[in-house]
Amino acid sequence: MKVQNKIREQFPILNQKINGYDLVYFDNGATSQKPLSVIESISDYYKTSNSNIHRGVHTLSRKATELFENARKTIAKHFNVINDQQVIFTAGTTDSINLVVQGLAKNYLQAGDEILLATYEHHSNILPWQLWAEANGGKLKVIPLLEDQTIDYASIPALISSKTKLIAITQVSNTLGLITDLEKIKTIAQKNNIPILVDGAQSAPHMPIDLQKLNVDFFVCSAHKMYGPTGIGLLYLSEKWLKDLAISKPGGGTIKTVSFEKTEYAEGALRFEPGTPNISGAIGFAAAIDFINSVGIQTIFAHEHELVQYAQKKMSEMPEVIIYGKSDHKAGVISFNIKGQHPFDVGTLLDKYGIAVRTGHHCTQPLMNCLNVQGTVRISFAIYNTKEEIDIFIEKLVKVIKMLS
Amino acid sequence: MTINEIEKEIVEEFEIFGDDWEGKYEHLIDLGKSLPLIKEEFKTEDRIIKGCQSRVWLNSELKEGNVVYTADADAIITKGMVALMVRVLSNHKAEEIVKADLKFVDTIGLKEHLSPTRANGLVSMINMMKTDALKFIS
Image (cartoon, rainbow over all chains, first blue to last red; front, side, top):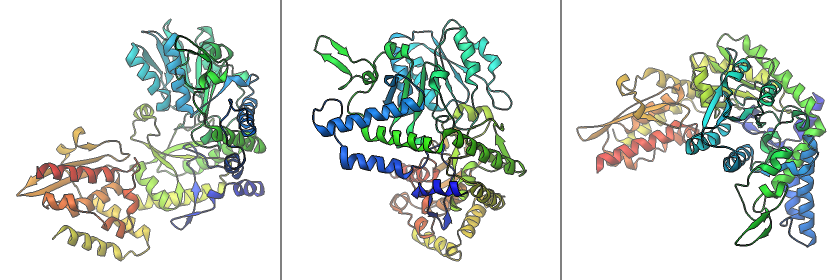
């Protein structure tokens, strides 16, 4: 508890009342709160070092460039990427996926090609592929879920054909919290020589990720779900794709030489970072990684896992509660409904008790159709959440059920 | 009764709850439960106000010079709010409906239902009610 208090002290936003009740923030899957170190890294940058990067000869520009490139190194190190040029700053997970799709569409994907996805993908890992498919005669194939909402791995070989050009899959379902067994996916993909894109938006905040060991082609995530600022994220490219992924978003900073006849593009990360990047965002992202490592990502995973087990056990004892994806092998998320009640009503009343949850389809409408529900209520945890907060949540949930029935 | 008078009546109805938000919401839930607002045959796809977490159906008709609304929602709190809106705006001249500022929502302490988040079906419903009324004017 003492350690927990030390952590909570670093998040001033948590210390407030909502409608007269202590705030319980259980919407970390949407975005996590930011520690003081992250907030201060951004304001310090603007107070002391703000300048445009990479081209300036003056001191401030060198300082800003150093901070920006050090941020890249921090992130590379965290994900165990040796060559930091494989770490590309984007606006976030959605931006990263779009960059990959548009690049692949230029020199890799062809009419008739197929992309394999899982049923529980976030819309951000569906729509860019769908838009490509609709415009270019491509096709999306979907890996079904089993009764317990885990991926039906056995169905994958039959879904793969000579036309399958990529598997784009989430590592952790944002709605259910279930963890995809990437080793199983990799075995099948490698046998068929199919590249893999891993959507790490919901895994990177909760569990250790070693990209060298994971050895996939693309990995994407967002800083704001992992204690960092909004508007900045990661696109990791394997050595091969750092060379082969076509540029789809050219602009200042991405070049070596330009003439009206022919432009030679830069090598490495800069190829994919047009315009003035989100410098303060990258610095805040690195500060967030430093925060995570000061606690320890294993500690975060263990703590959140304990919270999930604790909450899931208590919720299972309530006959009115239906939990979706009820496995212990999950990361920080519980999705549920109250029998006969609309998730919107449950979320609205919980908010009146100061408890922030998410309700609705969570940008996973295909999954909602599969579960045959309009939406769910989702609680999602971060390192600063406590068992005491879960007790408050359960106590209020009982009241909410009573009010609605 | 005029729109203003109905609004006043609702404000008085909610006044007894004072700061007791639980009482207020229980009342809202009761309002939602007590009113079958729309005929099943009107609960069609084209009458759904899309993009909201709670599905809201709205039907607008002109009867003897007045706009008559019937509506429904699948979330009970939304339905309670919908019931209040229908009570205030239905059976009035289109010109009056378009001008209504619906300040009572703020007065009775339910302003959060008018926030512009996508979760909220009510703002879209009020827009639709006014848009439909405008059509009857032209």
